[in-house]
Every structure is written in C-alpha cells, then in structure tokens.
Length: 299
Image 1 (spheres, rainbow, N blue to C red):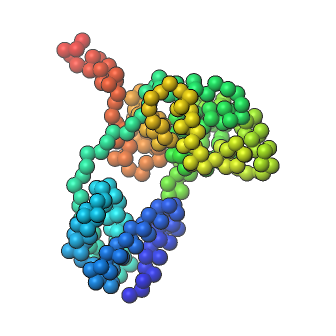
Image 2 (image 1 turned 90 degrees about the horizontal axis):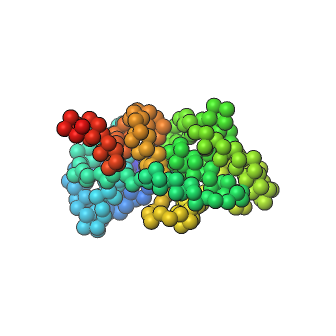
Image 3 (image 1 turned 135 degrees about the vertical axis):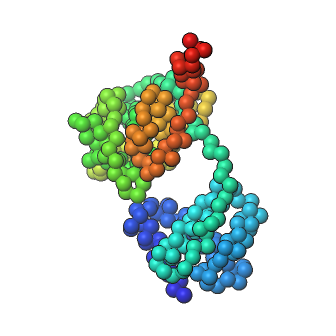
C-alpha cells in the first residue's frame, strides 16, 4: 500500500481547496492519532478499515475524555480523507460515511450591545500613533466583521478609499468585497497618513501590511487579541473580548436592524447560509419591540 496517500491528500487540501497550514496540520494530527489506534488493534493497512473499527475508535476517544466537538472534528477530518481515497478509487467504501454523532444544541454567539461597543470606542481617548491604530482596528473589526486573520493580513492594496470597500481574502483564498462606513474611513485615513507612518519609521522597513505593531512591523493575530484586551481594561465593561466577538456583534447588529440573511452571509464570507443562521437570534429589546408592534393584543 502506498503510504504517501495522506501526503497527496494534504497537498490536495492546500493547493486545490486552499486550506491554511494550520487547518492541514489539524488534519495531519487527527490522521496520525488514528494510525496509532490502528497499530494498537493490529490493523496495518488503513485502507482495510471498516465500520466496526470506526465504532471502536469512537469508543476509545470517549474513554479518553474527548469532548463531543473534538470527536466530531476528528471524525470529519478522517471522513474527508477516506472520501478522497474513494474518489481516487483506492477504496470502494468510506467507513466513516454513516458515522453520526448526536447534534448538540448550538450556543448562541456572544456579542456586544450597541452601548457597549460605544464604550469600547470611548476607551480610546488619545491621539498617539498607537491610539490612531487602535481606533482604526476597532472600526474595521466591528464595522466590517472581518476574521482576525483577515484583519491582521489586510494589505494597503486591498483598501479602496474612494469606493469605501475592502477586498478581503478569506478562507480558502476566497475573495469578497466588504464596504466600510464613514467612521471607519476617517479612522483608517488618519492612521494611514499619521500613525502608521510614524510607527513604520521606527523599523525603517517598507511593507504592504496595513496594521502594524509598536515597532512598525506587521501586526499578528495575537497582537490583535492583546490590543482588544487592553481596550477592554480601559473601559468600564465587565465582559470578555476577542476579535470573533466583534464579528458576532457585526452580524447581530446588522440582522437586528433589518439586514437580510443573504447580505450578512455575503459580508461574512460564509459558504453556507446555515453558518450565518446562528446569528439570527435577537436581543431582548428587539423581541419586546417586535411583540408590541406586531401582536394584536399588545397594541
């Protein structure tokens, strides 16, 4: 048996599907763990795996205390690999096809209320280069709903100030156009013409990355997390913060103010509408308003 099939699968994920190195590494980790299990049950050829082996593997993962989500991800990785083998006619049946885990009720995404978002903006009181960067960063994360990786890698050539749109490269190298508002435009232009210029002079390097750290180098995703944490500490909010929470907030506020689901799906860069539908919850205030407006006995 050609043991390089998984290597070919990884190249397929990277080249044809456009998966990131981090995602491919997760697939590799799941496969190597499965291989260890196969050695334990004296199965030397992973193309000979059957449904009974898969059920035994599920039991083993449960015994080792893996959560439902972790098990589901590992099964999804292996199902994709065996589906690849099936298409290449290496096997005749995918042993993971009929493996189904009981669906767990999804948690509603956490988000900030509008006054809480304003509190975050109010925490940026200065006009130093870092203050200008932080204001622009917050405007982009909340005003455009970008993933943290999309924000950290945002390049100068992706910004069109005249049309007020960002050309975002998302998951799978998929490109989408995301508009930004006047507040974001002002903050971004101020940072670009003043703050970023001053910060980049420190490193004396020229690069295309829009958001930079205090040394003028490209800002990392960890750096974005750190900045948001510091902003939260300066505010009066008693909450937690992470870039994805601002993305949740972006989607929630759009839907609560009347945006249609398809528009939000396009702005977020979701391939499936079902992914966007987790944001279709509404705030208690909106529930009360809609109830009073539309129920005949509430008028």
